[in-house]
Each structure stands twice: as structure tokens, then as C-alpha cells.
Length: 416
Image (cartoon, rainbow, N blue to C red; front, side, top):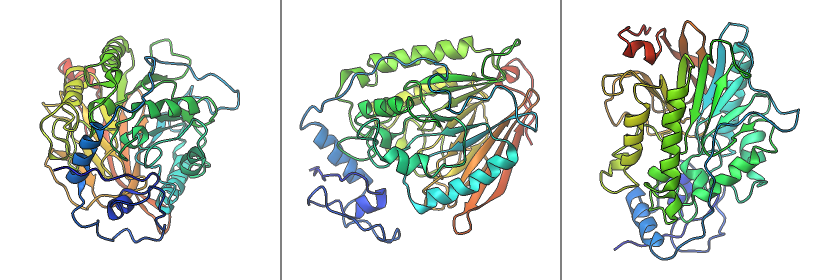
């Protein structure tokens, strides 16, 4: 029999697991609680998921109704950081890539400090946040103080637009990390109207560089997705956000049309939940060992990636797993490469759980990546960070000279 374990907002996952027994919801957990402490006896992810499902059946929670999001220009106050209109000093557009950052803890500050130095050296003009922007439940309003505490302050000095996507912790209500209240994501969209850094014109959107267009088409285009309704650990109660509801049908139509219409040489899809993943959460279609149902397994996200994205985009960038992975493009992905970059504030258990071919991967250290794109090549630099010294080390570099469109036309990809 499933037992509903009352969640508490604003705890780390480890703290919540250690203290998730019955008790007042506002009970304090000291920040000094050791991260190595063991979870509460009998409490583990499957127990919590079972409790979430039982709780979902208890009542219908109030959910917002979002309008379909589309691409939008960078408008508003003139002091907002502008999208890049030209490549950096190296002749390439340099983009910082981070994920699962929003704890407000010392580790997030350390990784951001290390990234700040690399951004200056590389001439980074854009950043990507791959979801779980505000642990544990997402914002309470579009002016929640957590935006300042868990995004603005840690990223001081990385003064560029940040393309943000929604993670499961940004859209949680009853159970932290469940993704069960998508309406909370609307508050992150609304926050973009007042932040210099935070760029999120809709729950899903696309951005092409150079900003303002180019005569021969964009060099690179980003397609940001909301993967939560098809990868939540609870059933979506609002029909609008169900796996086959109007929101996901519209998002799929939008993505298919946007990828088809894109004239960009390089195409990058951003989504919090990965398609392929060697970390403990696993890959779409079997997340966390689940292979049945419309939600927890991510089977319909797997379909979306395979039927719409693979073979059309050069890279899928994701977080969710607190690891760093540069997986190899394969026949299964039809040339599309999967990156997992979710170690900006948390780390994993130090070992690979699956065997998808990888160019490089790290399951124990904090870090981030830098994407560099020019007409001739796309380069991915992976950095690990020593949080004690706040210094980054270049751990791996992958360079591709042929976009997927060229590979599919019969040309081979050059990877080093």
C-alpha cells in the first residue's frame, strides 16, 4: 500500500529524503546537515513516486492554463543583455551550457565563479540553463526572491542572455521534483519580463544567431522545449497538460514546423530530460527503471525525440542527471548527438549505469560546458570544477565539422 509522504518546499533532495516522515510542513532543516547522511529508513525514490501517485488521486489541484508559446524577439527594457549579433573574438559564437544549477548553495557559486573566468577568456556571448532553475518546487510568483538567490546573485558577472528551459523541479507542486504542476512554469516565463539575464519568451521557443538575421540564413538556431508533461513522475491532472493533450500536441507541431523551416547550419535542441543518458535516471522510455505508463517512463518524450528531433538536429542538450556526458551520435540517433550537462550544483554517484557510446563522461564532479559554433565547425568543451578552489579544468573537447543535414546527404562527420 502506498503511503503519501508530505513534501516540504525548499529542501535539497537529500534533506527531503532524510526528513520526509510525517511532521509539520514548515519544520526547519539545518543547512549544515551533512550531504553524506543516509536517507530515512524505508524511504527511496520508488516509495516517493508511489506516494505521489496516491496523492494525485486524492484531489484535483488548481492548474493554470498556458497559451502556446512561440519564438519571440528580445524586447523590453533597453538595459537587457542583447542576443549576440556577431561571433566572438575567436570567430565563433561561444555559449556557456549549465544545468540543474538552482540551489543557491556554495557549489553553485563555485561553478559559476569558475565559469565566469572561462566566459571572459572565450568571449562567451550567450548562456543556456537546462532546467531545475529553482529547487525544489519552482517559484511561488514571478517576483519570488528565489530568482535573486538562486539565479541572479550566483551568476553575477556572466552578463549575457541566458536561454532558460523548464525542469521538473521548476514545475512541481505536491511532490518536489514531480513535474506535476506545469502551471508553475508560467511564473518563470513571466520573470523574463523583468530580468536582464533570464531569457524565456515562452514555455518553448526558438532563437537564431546572429540576432537580427543574416543574408544567407542563421549560423545556429536553438529550439527550447518543455519536456515536463511527458516526463513527470505523476499523472498530469489538468487535461491541457496531459501527454496527449492540446499543449503537447501544439508543442510537437511547433517543433516539427520550426525544425523544417530552419535555415540554420547548426541546430541545437534544448530539453531538461535527456533522450539518451548513462546516468542513474536512465534514458527516455525507461526513466528510473519504469517502462510502463504514459508519464514516469518518458515513453512519449522518447517518441518526440525519435520522430521529430533525431536526424534533424545536431545536438540534444539536457540536464536532469547531475552528470557531464558527451555521447556519440549513432545510427539509432541518426547522427544527432546527446549532451547531458546537469552538474552545475549537484553531482551523481560516481558511476555509469548504462552503456551508450560516449566520447567522454564524468559522473562524480561538478562542471559545465562551452559550445562554440562557426561556419566550419561545432566544438564542445567540457570543464570540470574544483569547488574548493573555484577553478575549472578543460577535461575534453569534441569537434564536429559536418552538420547532421550534411551527414544525412551522404557526407561523413569529422569528429576529433
